[in-house]
Amino acid sequence: NAGVTQTPKFQVLKTGQSMTLQCAQDMNHNSMYWYRQDPGMGLRLIYYSASEGTTDKGEVPNGYNVSRLNKREFSLRLESAAPSQTSVYFCASSKKLPGLAGGFGGELFFGEGSRLTVL
Amino acid sequence: SQQGEEDPQALSIQEGENATMNCSYKTSINNLQWYRQNSGRGLVHLILIRSNEREKHSGRLRVTLDTSKKSSSLLITASRAADTASYFCATDLNTGTASKLTFGTGTRLQVTL
Image (cartoon, rainbow over all chains, first blue to last red; front, side, top):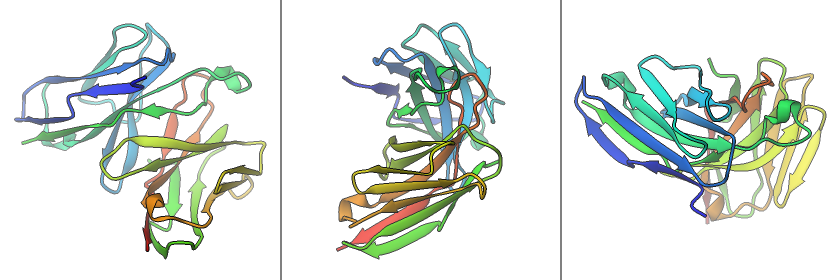
């Protein structure tokens, strides 16, 4: 199994350009997430989708939009890229676990990351 | 704002020694998880400890959780060069929706031969 697959792995954009990061998981997980990782900042949650058909804002949603296309796919769009969006982006997924509140709170499975540079 | 903060930020040890990393957090949690990240790669889940647990083991890993002090520690025993990586704690705040983990800034572990 591939797990969580992100594309592209690398991208360079000019300020104001738009692009979409694609993410797909083949583990039949309900929830999917987009994080960004910046030096010294750890990972910060941008958007998440608890289940197919729902999306919600995370800690740093400004400048981004997401689409949960189906249960497998969750895309992240930058409509007008800015240098502050230079970062490494990670997609992740998780499954519901019995015994935890609401069935959530389980481990996340991460993709390998997409390194985005905005000039 | 970061919920979890790891300490130390960087740790260098020799192979065979034990490595201890600490994590402090600010608010009540549902569970706490530790992840590992090799350079240039995605994060990999290591261990999950629930708020009603105090200690958990997995191979050479030992995790403790003290909810009264809002802190956790990760111990790697008999470290190997292959353990060189960054280690992150992540807290789940039990929002009742998805696993909205909040990650700390990480500890960079270097294990030398």
